[in-house]
Length: 507
Image 1 (tube, helix red, strand yellow):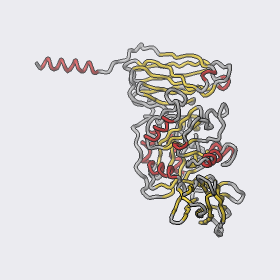
Image 2: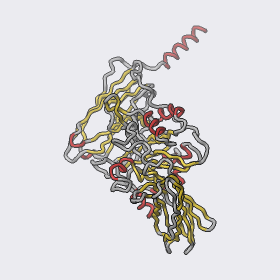
Image 3: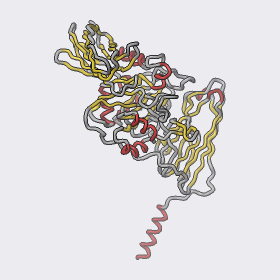
Image 4: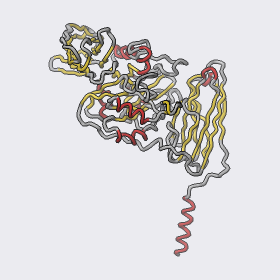
């Protein structure tokens, strides 16, 4: 009987032993052509991963003539495995490691798909491509640290309510962040972004790499080393019709807008809600097309009632045209406010090289900074603060500056993002208070459907001071809504601080 039992165990072990990849397993070659008919579409190329595979290597090349661009991603039998866009042509994935932008883990046999995104190919152009996919069943060939870990959000770093200063838009090696190392341009480790945020005295920084979440491993591993700087997960959803940051997600999100996987924006907005995150439309004032592929926001039938924020000031547009230049997002946002939308204005550096702290080639981490009133320093509280609208943007780089607003009408009180209800002819008052702004700074108010009067700035002594300004307003007869928002400008009229609105409704 004992011999039979042992024999059965050995048979069971033989059945459960993982298969071994044949040593002569040939590589797979995927090749083809794209034409103008493929412009702004996705192509998914299936290939079979044999049992016993522990390591996959992909080498990709294509004809880039006449500004043809092909982006690259990968799906396994369970879903998204990663996305590197156009910044990586060699990819490796194994049981324990992976090229940044891609998730390591068990290599499931079966059908995988190489995903091609084609943001640009001109009329009359034919571009050929080729991918060579190599399989290995031996020991893990990669020596880099794991590029992904189980997602966890940090516990609150501070438990008191306060203004929290941060950056909602930054990139690392997990997408197209790059920096100079030993004279060569290489993917820029996320640790550089964390250090730059700390050195800029930011309370938080969001890592929003393009269409991926593999940066979560670095966030999870390094948060303990940055006890004063909250590292927030995020993803920049990059589509052919616009870019948007999702802040707070901890799993992959669909991004192939216009394809059967994401025919409209609505399913993505559902995913954002399910993850208790928020979505912000990025740099909507930028152009689209070859000059900046998919950069401006042209998504049809956007349900703005489900969009929490707009990046009205982006680091790249701030450098090239100023906060209110031709590519600024402020006008785009104001036009939505004039339609009765309630959307929080935020900013982001859009930094791709955290080592450029002086801003020689791009806006450094924290320029501009977004300042959020949060009940504690945690991802959950920062997200709630943005959703509340009690937020202002520091355009000029004044680390101690505060812009706060309170409006009143009778017994009603409201702060930025809040609402007052006014009867016909009833007057509301708004008081703006600041600290640590230049002595000659002045207040400005932007309003819609309101009659604003009685500006009374308080005289200020020399130096950096606290000051206040009060105006009164009434809702114009017949108006269904109104709003008023504060700004702080220097003596030449240049924008220093931009505040969010207080909304007004009739009663």
